[in-house]
Image (cartoon, rainbow, N blue to C red; front, top):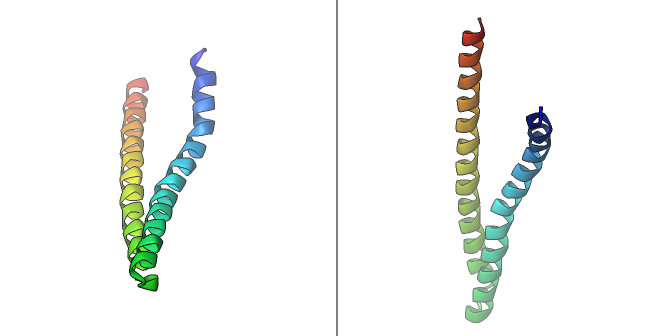
Length: 92
């Protein structure tokens, strides 16, 4: 009975944790590389070139990290669903 409150609180916080993780995965590369691109544009006086390059690289990095996270979640869902199916077969 002690496991039910933990599992319920974990199930409530898992979507919030996922949203925060995805937000950081998208925002951090975007902000860092945009600032680096802006700084390089000021140094070399090439107004939007390095900024745009930084944004494209940040977009690629963010897509990669989000893809890895989705694959990890999907594999965890497959594992839990297969465990549920196996336990259902054993109960019958």
